Picture (cartoon, helix red, strand yellow):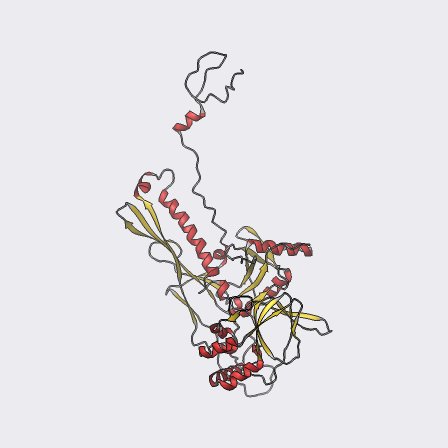
Length: 480
C-alpha cells in the first residue's frame, strides 16, 4: 500500500502511529482550521430581480395631493373600443350586450334591453383563409364583429397594385362607420388571412331598430351630427384660423374648449408586512444586519410588483389603457421591421420600446431573415438594442398568451412632450425610498417585530397618441 499524499493532510488531527511507513502530520488540517474561522459569504440573493427598465425610463412626477388630473381639449371624435364575446360551443357564440357600447355609434347608450335585443340578432359565420368579405365600392349590407381571425384591409393603389392599409383582429368591428349615411359604401376591401369566425348583423336589422326604437334613433342621429362638427385631424374641437389672406378681411375667432370631466389618477399602492423575530434581530446581525437584508429583498419584491402593475393593472396599466386607435396588429404574425415602423409612424418622438425578451428575440430573427442589423443605444452606460434609434428595453412583465403571442409597447415620455409619466409622492412619513416607506407596527406577544412596507405609484397617459401597442406578436419559430 502506498503512503497518502502528505500535502493533503489526514482526515483527523489525532497522531498516527508511525507504522507501515505512514508520516506524522506536521501542520493543522484545513478541516480543523475552519472551526476557528468564518467563511466568506454573499448577501442573500434573489432570482426574481429584473432590470425594471420601465421604472427607470419613466419621468416621475411628484403628486402632492395624491391625485393627478389630466386636462385635455374637448374630443369630438369618439374612439373605438372592442366588444367581448361568450362562447359555449363552436356555434354558440354571443356578443356580451353591455360591450356593444364600445362601438363608437353606441358609446353612451344606456338602454340595456335594446342592447340585449340587438345582441341576439347577430349570427355566427365562419370564413376560410383567403376569402374576400367585401370589396371597395360595394354597398354596405352587413356589419361585422370579429370573434377570431386576422383580416387584411386593402385598396387599389395608384397604378393598380394592391396596398395593405390595415389589419383587423379579435374584438374589432367593420361596418358601424356607415351609420348616418343614406347609401353607405365600403371604402376598402377586406380579405381573411386566416380561418376565422365572425358575428354578422344585416344592415336591414339596423334600419329596423332605428325605425322601431325612438331612443336608439335619437342616439344615432346625435352621433351623426357630432361627427359633422368642425374638428382637427386628431378629432378635437377645432379653432378657426385664417392664413394667406391679404388686405383687411374679417378674421374669424373662437376658443379652445376643454373636456368637462377630465380623468383623474389616484395613487395606487403595493403593501406587505415584514415580520422579523426579535431573537434574530438581536443575536444574528454579524457581519450582516438581518433586518436590513430582509427589508432589502422585500423592497425588491415590491418594486417588481410595481412594474407589473404599471403594465397590467386594469385601471391605469399600459396594456389596458392604451387607446384602441393606437393599437396595430402584426401583418404576418412575427414582429417584422415593417411592423415596428408602423408603430413608430403613429406618434412623434417615440422614446421607448418595451418588449418581452422573447419578443425581442423574435424581432431579431426577422431582421436576420432580411439581412438587417439593428442598431444600439447607450442608456445609463448600457448598450441597448434599438430600432430607428429608439431603444428596445426588455420587460418580462408583458405577458405571453397561451397561444404564444405577446405585445410590443411604444412610448413617448415626459410632461413637456405630452407623453407617459409615472406618478408618485415624495416626502411621505418614514420614507425609505422615494414614495416608499417602512413603518414600525410594534412587537406582538410572540416576539415578532412587524414593519409595514408600502409603495405608492400610478401612471398617466397624457394624450392618446403618447402610447401605442403592436399586438398579436407571434414568438415561435417558423420553418424556413
